[in-house]
Length: 187
Ligand code: DGI
Ligand code: FE
Ligand code: FE
Image 1 (spheres, rainbow, N blue to C red):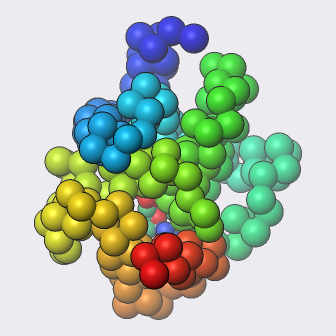
Image 2: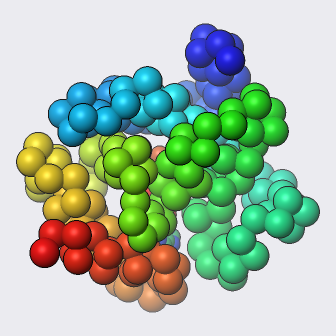
């Protein structure tokens, strides 16, 4: 596995704006790994690959979810949730990434999951706070991220859930379980 080759391959999957976001997530993930005693090498790799299939056609992702037996309940929730599972499958099959910790961090970067690993938290939080992100509440999450990844993620998932509710959308149940679990971790 050659990081330069992976970088070029990843860049080719997406438009320039998404690539800039990816580089932002890489930078933020390395910083979080250093701050919280995570593995900066795995953080960089998972962050680089986290949105690998984000710009892929919906039909292509749907076929992969069906044929590769990815979680079928994804199909009845927002299509925004698909790219994380499809991306983990893609980097394994196209680039031979086998590190399950890295694959899980990619797979769960959108929804989160219960008992998130440190690497899961790093990638998920970096995705919310990278310097190019601009949404209501992002500065609060950046502040919280300086002392607690759990508190920052609770606020981040909370704001995602609020937006989904405002728009009358359904919430992927795992996102609710993730938030509940993170609140338990604080106690
Ligand atoms: O891929 P990115 O845009 O960098 O970020 P992401 O992978 O966290 O995707 C977030 C999008 O997913 C955001 O627009 C909200 C949408 N989404 C839709 N339903 C859900 C959801 N996100 C979560 N966490 N849970 C949902 O149920
Ligand atoms: Fe994503
Ligand atoms: Fe992202």
